[in-house]
Structures are given as structure tokens and as C-alpha cells.
Amino acid sequence: MAEVVFRWFADQAGLGERVISTSAGTGDWHVGERADSRTLDALHRHGYDGSRHRARQFVLDDFDRNDLVIALDRSHERALSEWSRTGADADKLALLLSFDARSEGVLDVPDPYYGGPEMFDEVLGMIESACRALFRQLEPAIRP
Image 1 (cartoon, rainbow, N blue to C red):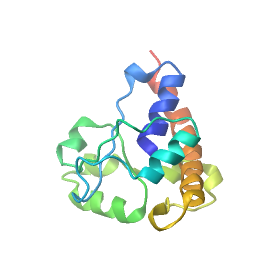
Image 2: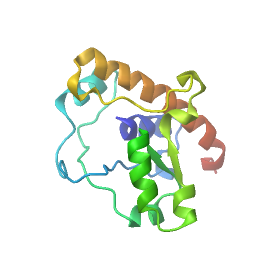
Image 3: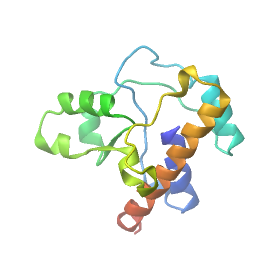
């Protein structure tokens, strides 16, 4: 969800060509698969297209290819931190919700997997708010 939403903000601002946004998991169990159909449904209900997404696993070279590595919860942040090879790698890590003052100290995006459609919509709302805040913070540096 976060990759699709962040990409939408970049595209809407006319900066999509200047932003590379990719999604990767810390595990390999869904590599190559599409997003969960409930995720795709939630994205579609809110005007996003997640149909091109395919799961992939984070690899160490991702630290080299990215200026910022966003984790959706602290367990993923811990895994990524353990994989950091240098202080520069670790400095690239941040939690998505840490960018959103409206999250009121909540740092973990919940996994909606065991919830119904309303949980997917709720999680999407959290992601939208945090991606909006993150994009607003990054936009001045992205603009030519």
C-alpha cells in the first residue's frame, strides 16, 4: 500500500519521474506474488492502482540504491537495522508513521491480514496520512 500511495503523491505533484519508490519485505515467502486481493480492493476503493505490484525481498544492495528506507513497523525496522552494514545504512532507516504528527505516538502500521475490509481501509488511511506528511517533507529536496 505504501509504495502505491507514495508514488501517487509524487505523480500528482508532477515529480514521479524524479522519485524511485519500491516495496520489499523482510521475508521471502511471497516473492513474485501480487498484493493480497483485499489490499488491491482497498486501494481501488480509494482511487489507487496496485495491480502492478509484485512482492520482492529486501536485499542489502537496497541500502545502496535508496536514500531512505521506510519500515512500516518496529519489527521490520529491527530486522533492517540488523542487516545494516554501516552507520550510513542505519541512518537511512525510518518508521513511516514517525513522519505523521497525527499518528499521536503510534509507530507501527498494523497488519490488516486477519481483519476485514474495514481494517484494510483503516490501515490505508494511516498510510495515506503518513505518506502525505513524508512527501511534504521530501518535496522541497525533490523539486528541480
